[in-house]
Image (cartoon, rainbow, N blue to C red; front, side, top):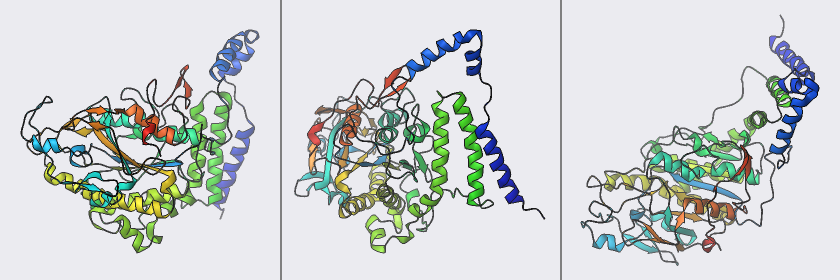
Length: 483
């Protein structure tokens, strides 16, 4: 009886060997050989102009030197999809309480916060009772209370928060970070997006950057706090097993060699096709991931004390707690940029019950993450970012809710070279509009890149005849928040 698996592997290797030495006739060859090659001369001139600023690299994920000494080496972005209410969480407005029920220039009647604010830590930052655990780390937080963006609708604002634009398909913040700095572990993705919302691939995509810089989505699409309470075993992997049980590792390697030979042949005929080069690199990364990823996402080796620290054992904090714990494991393994998404923050109504539920699901996990990073001496060069795509209005909607507000809201940062226990910027007396040290989303991006040692004006990529950057023609670094 013939060994079909062995024969199959041998056939794959034979085809791979043939492909590596076979060249097909292409349009480029036609231009080179027809009419004394005049067509190719014109093409070569255009091609050399387009690639004049490119410097080929044998390993696009290799660690790269920043433009200047970096304060942060890596990023964990805690993304609250749906936009938290800043005036109920991190932007204390006593005037809003005083003027409750009055009309305002923004329409509707003012709605005071239903939760008490207190001064926390040695720094005395005002933080709502909705975040009792995070408040214990007030002296690590840098609150940016003067944020603004261009769009008051979710999809557009989320896209701008991630890519700098709401109109065009552009690389995400994580993709730019990976492109600028590379990664410290070539066996796992350099950019991971944990439980991104369904249909949000642009938010972690690479756009025109090579495919290897795209984020890798891990886990089910994020939903609200209720879904976060699902009881999952600690050894449940949120990523599929990439291995093929019907093939040995050597046979799978032969199969991949065949695919790579086909792609390489295509690339040799069309060397300007960077997307093909990206596919080749992505396939190689996926093959290496088979051994590295399963152990990283398996939390069964974590102590009970660590699981409890994150609230990852059970209850409403389990889902987000596990993701925060995996984020720590990923950056510890050398991943450059990790995004953790929690949905369910669009509180147009039922604010009095829905907002506490959302806050409860993330409060302990985030506090656990900050504590764990600090005790492992990782917080000093890990930039932790928290925020949503915009804020909420100080006026009531539907009696017990708040509408979208892109004119003024709060995000915060911790670690990675920012001042702890620091409040930067402000909105007006009711929290409607940024008025002091205004930080537009372009400024936010420029500041994050600067903390990573990257000049946002120099981190560019040539595409369609021009040099693109994350901040386009905008962006100012707010270095007042730096240590």
